[in-house]
Image (cartoon, rainbow, N blue to C red; front, side, top):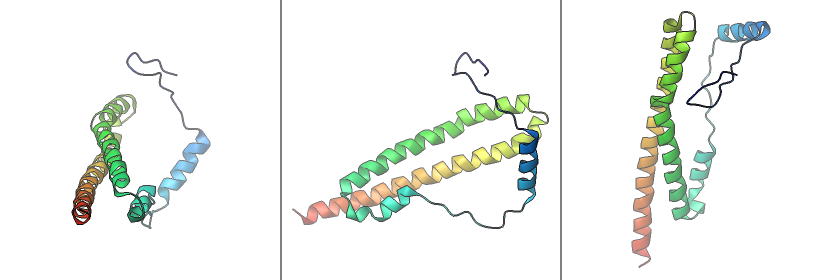
Length: 136
């Protein structure tokens, strides 16, 4: 454990020789397929028409807030972690390019999700307004 003044103590992990060998072998295998994304949120939305529209909107707004927080973390905390790792890792500036690219993917993904949630919330709000007008 590494004591920290402004954060909880940090647990430091090290890779074993066997673990390093397995990692090296895995990294040398080409990735030739597209990963399938599975999302409970998408499944819930797909069947959202079977739920109360207000409940769906409430859930989407909550998810939007969570993704906005995650986006903020990518823009601040993740950068700080990479800064620290660069300083303590041999040839850290070389590795940083890979770490930054990974962090950037996370940031862009969260930006896309927030935008998609805003669009979906807007569309469902318009649907809700139409439903309200037809029932008046």
